[in-house]
Image 1 (cartoon, helix red, strand yellow):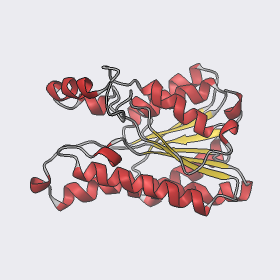
Image 2 (tube, rainbow, N blue to C red; image 1 turned 120 degrees about the vertical axis):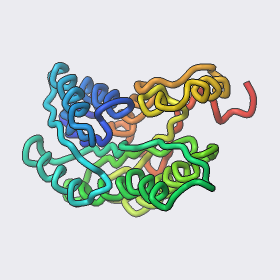
Image 3 (spheres, helix red, strand yellow; image 1 turned 180 degrees about the vertical axis):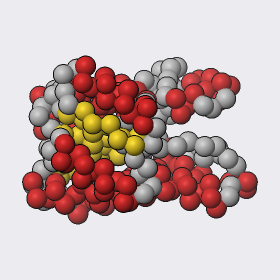
Image 4 (cartoon, rainbow, N blue to C red; image 1 turned 45 degrees about the vertical axis):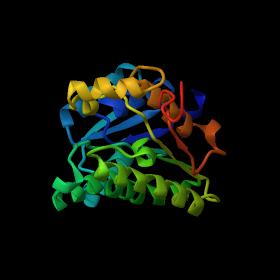
Length: 250
């Protein structure tokens, strides 16, 4: 996609799954990638894949729940690859626990990674985007933000917060040249989903009208569109590739 050629993208949670797939598709379109993840080995594997596609890559270990760590990473990225044009705030966790058994630590950790992590990333990259008069802020919400999920109250609430942040920031930045959008994936075949019991995965697959899990690339292509020059009139939107799971019947 020509609309991302020459851009620099900063991706969190890029050591596997959706983040890795998005790094690859952006690189195929001509973007250089800052690959961040709390798992440095995974980030380095993704960075290697990006360089094999002929683009520059920088792998960094980043804990998105730590604002200072995010700011340090974005500063290093700017020095080594140039100003960040595209942010994909994608880092996430997916523990399941019944609300009655949920501890305050469970709740806070989910929000620290998902919602606070997105806030930290927005805050770190926004000043330079405003100066440039161009930018793409993209984050990962979830279909669960709108449908709910058993044993996932903390996850769904945090992802709903990202959806709300997306709309609010899109309104605030509408005249700045910066668009703000999110993806809200359905059930995608990622390492995080595969941590769930096999029975849960099979049962979830049966609820999808297409009767299959989505692939990371299904989300990556949606993200790359939102990151592109062609999506300049697209803001405040939450795209949900989900295999038809919003349909009432199939």
